[in-house]
Image 1 (cartoon, helix red, strand yellow):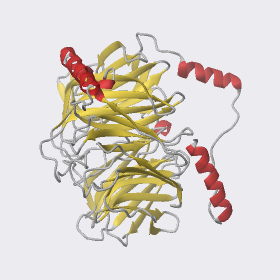
Image 2 (cartoon, rainbow, N blue to C red):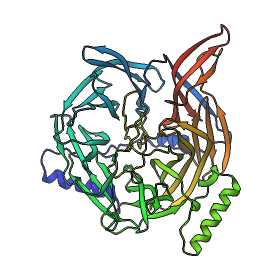
Image 3 (cartoon, helix red, strand yellow):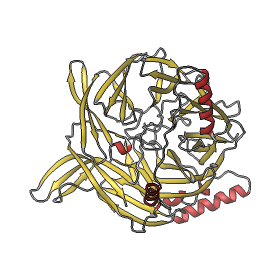
Image 4 (cartoon, one colour):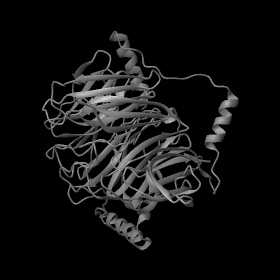
Length: 557
């Protein structure tokens, strides 16, 4: 079943029957064979065992301890945007700084935007080189929303102010075409709100009100449609995973209901983005109602036939337990095999959250991270300088690293264990990264892992990422002053591990100290990562120190 092709046909039917809906356009064109051959050579050429990790571009900006942290938004090959509250006021408005960097990390445009001082930043998105910021009043029942468009090419800023007719606790935000989609809860019911940027009107998308259902994911596809993932929580009925795909006008294109095994509970679920024909949903599951995951799952969406979920417990993965001591990992695997042989459930559980799904010619890959959470799961507030900030400061997932689709946060009416408390956990320790590969039918092919020292954060955030280069994978994470890089074969065998430090502009300087908070490494585009953070550097010549915010471009050659 080809979901993307089906959506395209449905779109054509809707376009024919309903006037005023623009055609779905998929880009394509002819490319000379010589260029294609050259491109394939550079992309698919395998890495040598001694892959070269270089830092071809650097950006620095002076930083004071009282300054707010930058929100970092990747725009892929178009560059990076930095957003920061300046703590300066113009009447009743607060001034926010916006800096655009190109792919060489050179400043290409800086501007300021004025936002009502009562508003907190809620989320962000990026599309076609433009930035979209959401601000919200924190106190009123019907909270006013400010949606700010920052158009890089035109060097213009446009602000929209509106008050929805319903009171929604927002958990998701994304932009497609000229529409903004908000996901959240009205009372205990998942709700989707669409805002038209052209005529500045709002509407609630029909069919999104469901009782005893949790909203798992709202995610843009590559063809200007978007997916909504819901999980039914009714203990008296058969549990179901509901996958819906809407067009850019909020019209329902796909509605697929997938049965969940009676003895299993879905903890987290995210979707792919229709870069290719198949749509997959992946995430974590457990037995009963415990909040710790027992494994990962995958399922291909097919509304025209019944499909069965693929469940994999952690002992079935070759490298998932690599962060444990070898004897302990072997014991867990042996015990799991024995328990299954006598009809019992594997006992091993851990906290795992899915980061992103990538699509490639072989199928799909799922990046997830193991963490130890805070002991308090309930209603914790983020330590963000911007107040209760339910979205991450980074773009954790996009097929082209272009669209920021933030994860949901712990604002579910169902509470723990159904709410994973993604970004509101204090003193979270991230301890391991797992990367699983699936074929185009959603079947597990192989897995890899990156082991690193426990990273203690004030809120749960992504700490690792990866790039596929030919038959090998480069996995990375940042631990204080160092970047850990690891090269894996397709079967997960580690061929090289290296620790490098962020490069400095001045060869006479050294890194004196660096904060783990507001510091990360992310996939950028092609064969590049970017790493950012705050550190104090010392000039060994004149014995002076300075505090800087930095971004370095990391190349995998």
